[in-house]
Image (cartoon, rainbow, N blue to C red):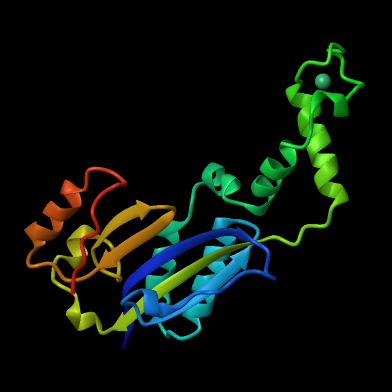
Length: 199
Ligand SMILES: [Zn+2]
């Protein structure tokens, strides 16, 4: 039985499908790549993982990836088509566009601004889509070390996680020992951690 032994998530963000370039595995040492799409990061991630799941009998590892990587509700709202559209349209709205405001002195009003932006978005049909790619490597579970259970990161192995330029990279792989795996995980100071690659 094969499982995913390494993966990397590439957060492309919002793009117009007409201009979206797709991904190439030649940029990484991972053999396979799948791109998911949706209205938000979580939707696109879920879409990509569902495509991968169709190639596996046991999808518990893929469910674990989703549970580990999905964003909380608030962050997911910010990584979405609607947020991107809001930001883009927001710049084009000024107090002159809501002259029926109760403040009535031409100053910025949060409530009226939001309403004007939403109306302007509704007038235009959206063509944007949120894209997330998952690169992955397939191998056998026998490559997994014995500390697998203790760390309770099932069944994809141990990981170190980094974020650079919106590009989240996670390497899984066997560590020398239970202690060295734990040490690596404990030593990770923050999101700017150096990538540690394991065979
Ligand atoms: Zn107002």
